[in-house]
Length: 291
Image 1: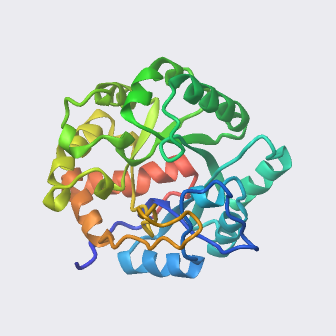
Image 2 (image 1 turned 30 degrees about the vertical axis):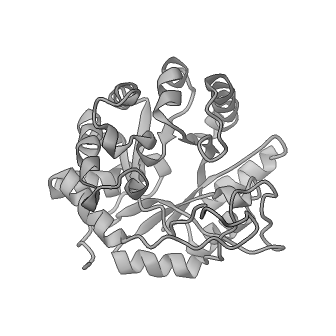
């Protein structure tokens, strides 16, 4: 598909790079092993789509070792790239300072892939992460399900820093606007308590053209257009059933140009598309204003 003409400063807010061991160690408890993806490959993808800015999200196979992320941020530069790291109890304040200087502006908690659906555990993880990063002006990013978001609605409202919700909060296309928990996410979004990434829609729908995601995306944009972001989830890694975790799991073939076309349809007009792709990421991640 021909890439959409994008506004200056357009940002993909959810991508990954992957290294290889031993330079970039893998988490021994990872669910899959990806092939290497370099900053140069990411830059080529950006240019092919007409994107100017990118957010690198620490992927689960590298655990809390952010070396690959840090090197990629250094290679891409502060005008183009920001990062979201993963930290643990061993991550020092000095390391957080180093990551901030490289462009990290948030930390990610992956509750879904880790199978952490217990609201009590999720509440504790969110509170601990927020306490560490709020003084730096960072946000917490979470990948979890609507049921967890709904159970933690009051706790999320009380967090001392912004919360960014990955991948539509795992709102499923087939569930429609009445699916349990979506009302809570839309309330939080409308109150400006959370940002939501309209990312990885292909994971959430089996319909041709992902048509059943359109009402959900439009409801989120209508709830608060200043708190909606877009991400491709490139290079589309994930667990391939039947392969052991230490085998290389192939990337999925996803048309990111088509994903941007869908976003333009959800946005409805050029001004809203620029808000989602340019203004909102610039404000959250601290990019210079385009123009």
